[in-house]
Length: 119
Image 1 (spheres, one colour):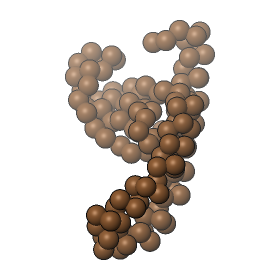
Image 2 (cartoon, one colour; image 1 turned 60 degrees about the vertical axis):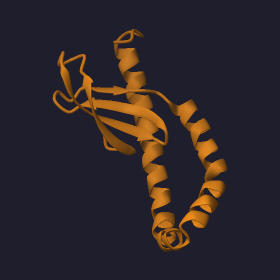
Image 3 (cartoon, rainbow, N blue to C red; image 1 turned 180 degrees about the horizontal axis):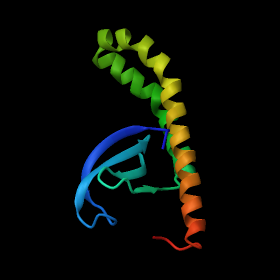
Image 4 (cartoon, rainbow, N blue to C red; image 1 turned 135 degrees about the horizontal axis):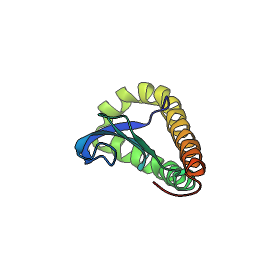
């Protein structure tokens, strides 16, 4: 999958490998969207579009308050990082949206390939 959000790693049981392996976890905002086994490459995609839009709305509404808190706590660091952060934010948001919609398409495709059954 080309799109990416925030990537984390964890050791999880892989249903295909049949053992605990290292997995890559892709998040969009606070939502887990894709889990990929790094041993066999099996991915589990989730359709989180509705929840993502709700989460994004909440994050946007709370952003001014979070920025004000950071400014009060670390005025020099906040001010120095603002130009870079502001320039990167649209690209990060675009990465999240691509991840969410790509995973939803993959989940729908998998669901229809299984005849509507979950794996």
